[in-house]
Length: 254
Image (cartoon, rainbow, N blue to C red; front, side):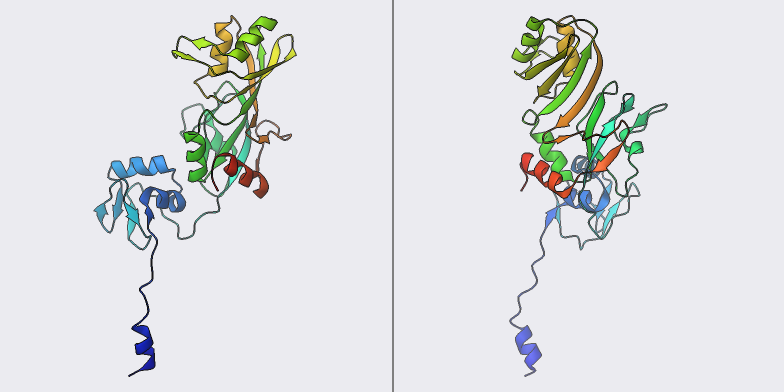
């Protein structure tokens, strides 16, 4: 008997790892997992010529076609987290609207990126962009656990009692929610710094309005362990490997 054939008879078939289709599309198609799920739900993904189901698992050896024209890449793009100092007036979305500039237009990176969270159009400061779907999902799922620090200027002098109310938590009637206790430090007669873990819609502006104060300038200066680090408005940088690893750990990723 041929020795090669005899040995081959005892070889186990190679085990091929399966992953969820939305994760595969995030890694090879530049989509977020939510976008991938939405495209799958709409019948926009074929696996071996058959419309895919949400939750489907693949090996990558299948013939996977995106009907929106996106080409899948063989090589996984390197995962990256970018810090951008968003100017006021720029929207933190991937969509393009008439007469508006979005954050992606400010960062001409080689791979498709997505903003992690939101920063109001009228606000400026730090926002992360990434192609790492796991990081984006972890941060989103853990809303209310990660610190974000802001510099705030208002239209009139702030009383000590108002600062105490901001720090202690305020009921916001429009949202029918009470804000969580937070750290507030006065920086001037009409300015303060505030550290939030919540991410309610226009939270700081609503909190100030509830006390009769109108925000005139709002800038985010830190997210978790990363600050603006001297970035001028409109400037961006790829975070160092050490910074990215630290952020992933803070987000609960290994």
